[in-house]
Image (cartoon, rainbow, N blue to C red):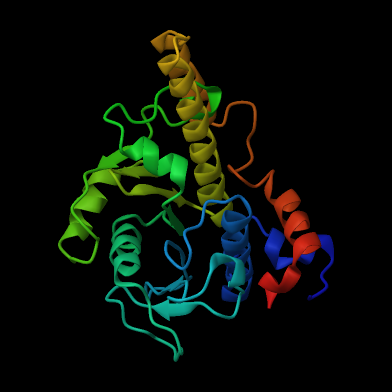
Length: 262
């Protein structure tokens, strides 16, 4: 494991500008998704756009578990899916379609994170979607898009519909499929995914209780709207979403297995 002073560790930079630092943070994000049980074997993807006018981005190699990902393994591709550096690995076509769409349509999308986690996918299959039943869920009210299922995302013409459906939001529910989050930083994309999954699990537990005869306690709309504003306007915390938690996540990974930095 590379040794850096705390204020020079590339894994802890809030908004890294070097490819090397982005690779380390992206690898950390993969390991965190696996650690918190939001991965799906060798499937799903996280990508990061690299600095520069070329619109190149890094994405995970097709065939590695999230728990195996390290900073050196990523495939660098362009918006047409072409490798721009040699790699022994291929890129999943569905991953390319989804991620290239968001990177193409959103200049602020440094990181795009897509999962098939169980709770989030269950919510995506409910007509009512994510309900404001918990404080976790309220941050997403009025701040998430919805994309109807079109089959496995391997057709390039779906890209424009993905762009249209996410709009200016940072969370996109993919009906019957999963969820996607966008971040101006890797930390932001991860924390949005983490709390969407937590909100989804709470809702499913509450719905199970209701099925047994309990009743929802749903706050008034003006209250849930207020909570959404507080989260999304960052009231009470001027730091970028995810940046406050990130050093603790990095310490966790370094204790468990620092090989993500390799």
